Length: 127
Image 1 (cartoon, rainbow, N blue to C red):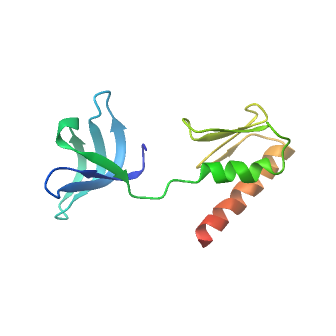
Image 2 (cartoon, rainbow, N blue to C red; image 1 turned 180 degrees about the vertical axis):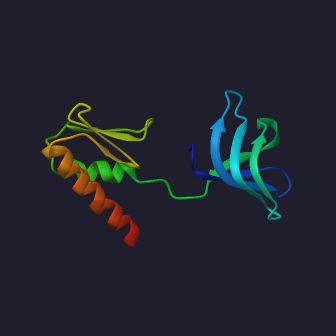
């Protein structure tokens, strides 16, 4: 959830919306570009875990599993591995890595994956 736009709910209908920049071991949150429910703006805000009830992501997460499924159509079974906890796709045992920002790798296979990634992003923008 780091770098995502989140909504942090406090008690009594109070909340903050901002970009999540960090989470401590104690679940304290650091947000930037923050707005309160009263539209008060804060450039940076730390919220202790004891002060908030829950957090929601305000923007749709990138559908990495869908992209992995699409990439898997051109590779043999087992060569495309979606690693959910890292939110990456590993192709050909890590020779090609895909994340939300793009494709890392070289060669003809990486070029094909880049084309699939680019088309997938275009298709997402159409929705």
